[in-house]
Length: 129
Length: 129
DNA sequence: TATCTGTTATATGAGTTGTATATCAGATAG
DNA sequence: CTATCTGATATACAACTCATATAACAGATA
Image 1 (cartoon, rainbow over the protein chains, first blue to last red):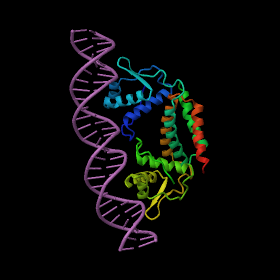
Image 2 (image 1 turned 120 degrees about the vertical axis):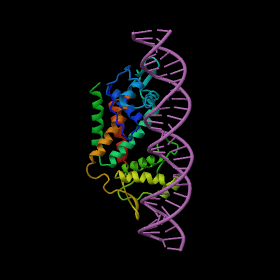
Image 3 (image 1 turned 135 degrees about the horizontal axis):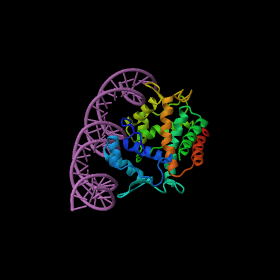
Image 4 (image 1 turned 90 degrees about the vertical axis):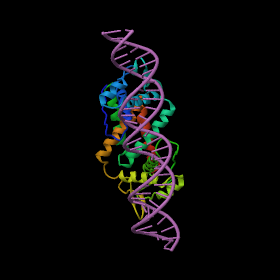
């Protein structure tokens, strides 16, 4: 699992870590049970503080994406995407999606262009599973 | 133009104002040239500081969504969505979309479900134009 | 003149972000 | 047993963001 972070971005580092790991799981590059690097190791790799990594892992744990054990460390959750997603997640997700789709519309992207790009991204995930 | 804000949300107020206005424009409820409420008026309506509204308007101006004149106030930009969107916007938009789509995938939404929901939101915009 | 508008400046308090240390407990390798 | 790795937790700090609070200025308008 190799992550790319931009330490100069306005997006908080801990959130970038979260986003990159979620993307890696979506692409199938990190599968159920796969171990994540230890917080201290990942922090050392990027020259950042391990508390920042800890914050990202804790966020992933609270969102049900990974499991953390004292012995086995952080691993991708077995049942992260099994069964239907919970209603609260769907509500929150659709609200964020609505904002993003509104932005695209206001900036002149038409319906088909938007849907084509979404489909392309989704197909890109599956291609590497 | 009526906006709904959640002052207890973890989403910053100025960003909620920005999001609601972008959504209103996408839905066609605010059209080219339509005036936005004055910063002081909108602030008074919600019992917030006018600097917070100012920040939202300035954000919309820098993103090319509205124009602000000292005399005529803030109005929806004539050419906000005319012509093809600029490449920098597309890049940024796709990156944010990729994160959102990855989240959906990890939480168990399948390709067709995601695309169906996106299409439904987009159709909801057009229905009120 | 009085009032509305946007614009700008400064200050303050609360909260977030990231870093810096330090300590503790459990697991593991030598 | 010892040394070392892991996660977990606590505290402190500087820098930044968010929202508010005042204040002042310029242009337009009634």
